[in-house]
Image (cartoon, rainbow, N blue to C red; front, side, top):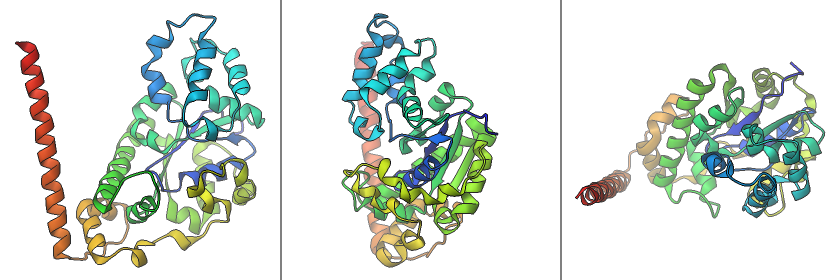
Length: 317
């Protein structure tokens, strides 16, 4: 088990607990996961162009791309560490080139195994499979109602209950479809509610999936969280303390009956499939809002399709 060096990907809908799991894994003596990368799919799509960069320039140009990206401050690696990592690689080892920041972070921490915690890669699992076919995928899932409430407190993410419900449902369904298909037994779902209620049991399961021995220090992640979460990321402040059930089922106290009904209309089937309780709240206003939202989406889709059809017709003429 201790010889395993396959990468570990922690992903899922945002605000589901991926940072919490990342910090727990970073407290393992063999695992090191930097901040969110986000650029893997973009770089992979540009592989042909990067292959044309002069041999004496490509490492510096790629380093500059990463340093100039908005995610660089949270990665936890220096420009020099990136450059050193790229100096040990050739473009023929393309997956290692893309993951240079992850490997550089692990090297700086003197750990043999790197990982990645970018929630949005739940939408890119086929790309991850192409690049890292032996990867372990840890899909963190949280009750979508609590996810939406958490998003609504931030400056990023979906706005409103219906948009949030659609966003959560799409990410969770995509991960549950692509993960088992592409990664088989290397795909594992982690429920946020179970992680905070019984972290040792869940982490033992996770370690079994990723091929590592469980270490009790993983429960002390909050002692070192300040090393991995920069001060500007105030939305991760709760990860600097021990796990608690306090943030589970927030929706019972903080969602109005109308919002509960809206969410269940949009994503109730998935909540039920995942085993989350339904209130089956009925609010006439919620039905009206939901119906208007769905009609608006249909109209926008029809307009887009009309534009696409007209474009093709005009360019055939």
